[in-house]
Length: 187
Image 1 (cartoon, rainbow, N blue to C red):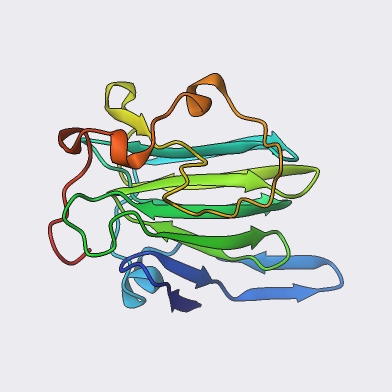
Image 2 (cartoon, rainbow, N blue to C red; image 1 turned 30 degrees about the vertical axis):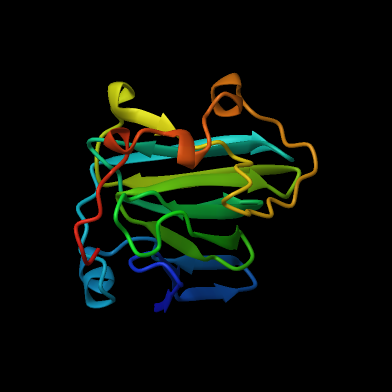
């Protein structure tokens, strides 16, 4: 497995070893010891899978308190996956990373607590998997407007399909700082 750093501290791309032949392939998607050797020492408590169609955009979501670290990957299809630093006081507050995840490149993205997360479906359909470090807490959920012009995210969909909830999120600058996670130094 290879870990690639991004411009946002703690947001990492993982490229697992894939063993393939004419029958198909095998890959290890999580091994506590291997990922710890690569720097990811997380305890995951909830796994989720979603299925979406082309141009569906989910995000930008976060929880505060009870921030979730997420190890995400595509099981079938392709997405543009985005992480945004929303930690008040962070030197990279408001900056984002966008990564192509697909069933062809086998990449995973780790988004630590304190970041908003979203993805846009680029293929006809996608099956998307999440490993989370905290349980989902509806009382702690929040969101940032997907097309916040200050974030300058190029989503690759001209007219994305959004939930009413995602359409109603506010711009990052309009969210009171006491509703956002705080930066505590190193991730």
